[in-house]
Image (tube, rainbow, N blue to C red; front, side, top):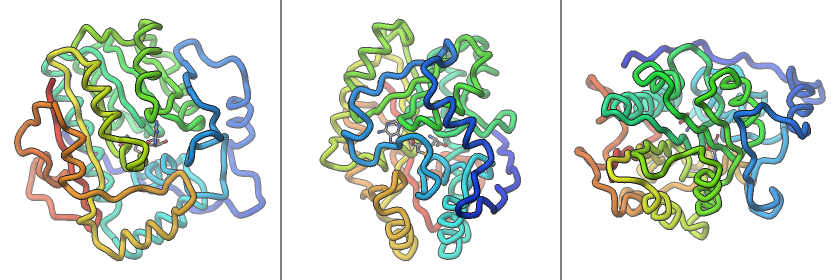
Length: 310
Ligand SMILES: C[S@@+](CC[C@H](N)C(=O)[O-])C[C@H]1O[C@@H](n2cnc3c(N)ncnc32)[C@H](O)[C@@H]1O
């Protein structure tokens, strides 16, 4: 897989000045009528759970927008750019680290599609990059035309972006849902016929459990997902590790506290628990570079990655 490295987002968005696209986004976020291939199954009032994005908050960093900026996307605001640049001051290789995760995600989709999987659930899908070939749906569709692809995210802004991207792709569904309530998500997907859980499915959990705290039971979430999957299913998972450079962890913690971008650093042993019951492929749960071709340098952000089968 050859990754494409688009140019970085531009700095701007001065305080107090309406951000480009914000009015249109708010309009869509508050509209009762979304495109047909989309579903809102948020099971708790947004305010009832901590760190749940509500509408567009341009004053705080946002996990999806921050990641979009690091990947070179254009759908981010000044606050995300500033936080990302402060990360890069400590870890100049942050963008490389973000692209290693993206390449792992695309490679996992490619492998699953080549193995005949025709159903994908991307949990914590994030904002599509729309740079031709760098979104998981592009790769799946290329190998398995007409593939069923369900993009799930709890952020209403991501929901809007995914809807815009996938509006003309009938086999793709955008779902606003919080994976911290896995039973509700699985049941609704099943009841609505969006996912056929009797068939092998590839579940993509790339950079999402980082935002689920221990008391929200990430291992339980994974167990519920695994129990729902048919034999032959795939799991691709990444998680930032506590082996990350200390200065970078301190910078990120300080700059994201109280925002949706606030994340949890976990040890390899802790992340390994999320793979319980999956048949984990070799080389296990190594730094993400180990899954990619070439001699790739370690990055200050250490991301661990695994592929599991059911
Ligand atoms: C770092 S981004 C990763 C995006 C994408 N998976 C990728 O690898 O490029 C994390 C995404 O997870 C979403 N997310 C975080 N917690 C979530 C939850 N409880 N339920 C659903 N989505 C969540 C965020 O909104 C964000 O879009």
